[in-house]
Structure formats: C-alpha cells, structure tokens
Image: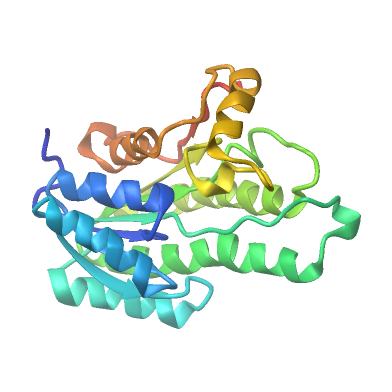
Length: 253
C-alpha cells in the first residue's frame, strides 16, 4: 500500500456511509488524518471505529452543509485538531425523485439545491479560504453521472443539482488554481450503495438489472469510486484542474 497522504489532513463530508465512508477509509489507509463529517454522529462513529481498527486517526464532527456557520466551524475544528487542511472531499448529498417535474414537490426541489448545490458552495468557500492562505490544497467534489453527463426521466431536481455541482467545480477550479488550490470532481454512476436501489429492490435484484443495463454489467464498488477520488486529490494528478471524472461502467459513454 502506498502512503500518498502521510501527515496530511483530509476532510470528508457525508462520511457515515457509502462512498463517503469508502473515501475516508481509503485516505486513512494511505496515512491521512481524516475528519469525518455528516449530520448524524452514530454512522460517523462507525466509520471512525473502522479507521481506528486499521490503525488510523480520525475525528468526528457533525455538521449540516446547508448551514454556512456549521461548515465554517467544521473547517476550524479540523485545523485546530490537526494543524491544517490539505484535502477536502465534498461528498454529502441527497437524492429525491420518482415523479415528473410537473409533480415535483417544491420542498424536495429546495432540499436538493440546499444540500447538493449550496452545501458544496459553503464547503468550497470555507475550505478555499483556509487553503489559499496556507500554501494550497486539493478539493474533490462528488457529483454524479446524472446531470451534466446523462439524463433519465423523473429525477429533474436531482439532475439539475448535480449538473450544477459539475459546473461549479469547473468554475471554482479556474477561479482558484492560481491560489494553489486544485479543484476537480468525480461523477459516479450506480454504485454499491443504498442510493442505487430502486423502490422495493434488493441488492440481488439490482445485480440482475445491472447485468442488462450497464455496459460493464455491474455497479461500481465504493472502493473503485474512492480510488478515483484519491487519484484526483494526490500529487499524481498535479496538473489535473477542473476535471469531472465519470466512474459509471460506461453508462454515460
């Protein structure tokens, strides 16, 4: 195992499950001190315990990314505990869908924008403020193959929010590359998380469906998505700026 992130501090939002947990575990395995954030403490503590069992170091900080004050406090806590912030992964997000846009509840639309878009903005602003004043850093936003890359029916709000994340990533990358802050995105497709399960569907049902629907014939593992995140955050991607790396088994190809 390489140790590209030894002595680095990494912040991961949405670290209590799924892709966020896999990303946190992967950074810890490569030597990082990881700040685990989300709205609920219990799943974050589960992630922390997994990192500790593997000999890693992490800190749990609850925060709601839709609240700017929460995110500012989160970054301050990370810096106070570990002395800086080298990498941030803005993964926290929600999914709402299942109806055409004419029937989309405005509450669902607003929640998608508040968390998936404004939440990323809050994170970027707090993270960049520290990084550009302290020698730079790397940020990876988790977007989706749905939105900028492909569309499906009855998820217009989610599509819009994730397309915005992809565009926000590129805009922020251009704005701050000269500040020493590299910003990129990873856009997963269906992965081995509960979010990719349709209503009433089991994991076995999904496996059968994906054999027909996916060019690759399966969902991506969360570890595969995490590997893409770590690449973009690492020195291996030193000249990669404003990229939006799709990890979806060819679905958007």
